[in-house]
Length: 96
Image 1 (cartoon, one colour):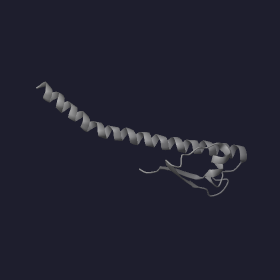
Image 2 (cartoon, one colour; image 1 turned 180 degrees about the vertical axis):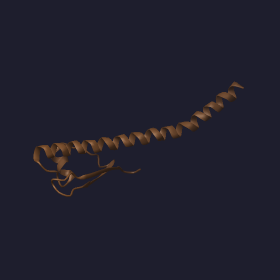
Image 3 (cartoon, helix red, strand yellow; image 1 turned 120 degrees about the horizontal axis):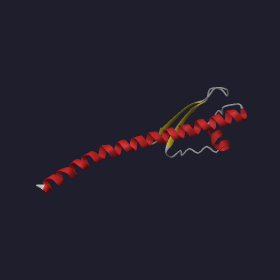
Image 4 (cartoon, one colour; image 1 turned 120 degrees about the vertical axis):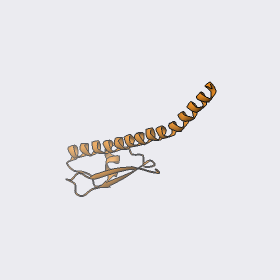
């Protein structure tokens, strides 16, 4: 009887572990995307405060403000309209 109970508990645990692991992975991915967006926003703030404009391209922040974005993992949509209007930024995770 104990073996059957132990076996059924183990099976139940294995069945529940997959959805829980996926939930943790999804939340971690969301957190990483938020961190990339936050780093870009901080670089934009610094650039505008020091130079008085928002750059037309993300590369300007990478080259001049030390911004690091892993382009193997993330795609950044950076839409700039004018140098005095904050760019629209959206970060996507590649491959998922």
